[in-house]
View 1 (spheres, rainbow, N blue to C red):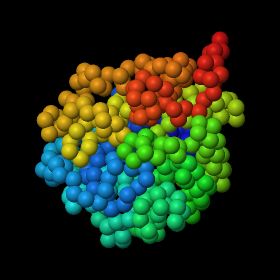
View 2: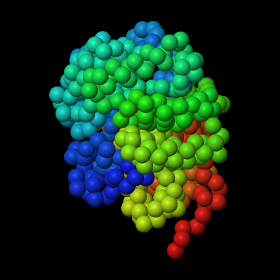
View 3: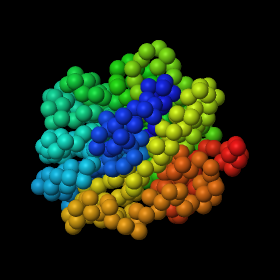
Length: 396
């Protein structure tokens, strides 16, 4: 995750992270990316059931029952384990997490245990009453997925009327006093909506706009043929940077982030070197602390049946089950399945293996490489750096 706004606008610097000792336990949410101890943010897919059928859904969720999901008692026990291990944030996701009847009880338990709680939702079930309930449960932030405007969103989400319902969810969350953001996954089927999504975020007055790159997992793997070509992706990211700078220049308080393609770190540094060279050294220092892709390091996933994965897209890689062992033991073991994610630099082949920017990117999103080639060590096909940039000699 790259905080485009904070780094381009210079509202965060190395001194901010150092002030908290670069500790996950002590750092506020916006500085977690720069922590040194890297306790993981846990994405808990609390249910796989969903009332929509989204084209890029990494969990391949449908509106049906999924046997074997963690019970309420098991969920409360898990939350205690996560808190004991020092997990700073639990992101409740799905499927559609609001379809889980005990979600608010579990979220309140996580809040009471001292963890920050985040809700990732399609927003269609958030009316005013639900918004108040979500706020009372202690959620600190609600991210609502919007893939386009009107009919485009409805088509990608598989249900007519989904856009208006999701828009109502944004407004209900805001009315309840919740920090609210738009989450937009960009690919070839909705690239034309980027400007409209920025306009919607500004019009609705959300706190955050997160632009996600397509992950080739679940149904996202099936539509990977519609992903942007690398040169198109680079154009999109430059446009995101332009729009984020424009918002900041006009005093519009929306934090823009990009997610799931850490080569964006490199492109942002190149922009800073070009436009704000006096800040380049401090931004590079922060980006090295960020470390690029954090799958298996500062990101963990727990699926609905309690299986632990390096990230929420890599359900084919299971490193343990919280029904059998505590999360902290699973995560700290010398697990041979986690070791390739944690090795610095990662042992990769091709362009990613040769790239001089691995400290900033960490080899991209491994699930894309596995989807495209079947090989964990292969290059991320969504990298948009040129061969010359990848292999360029470091200046002496």
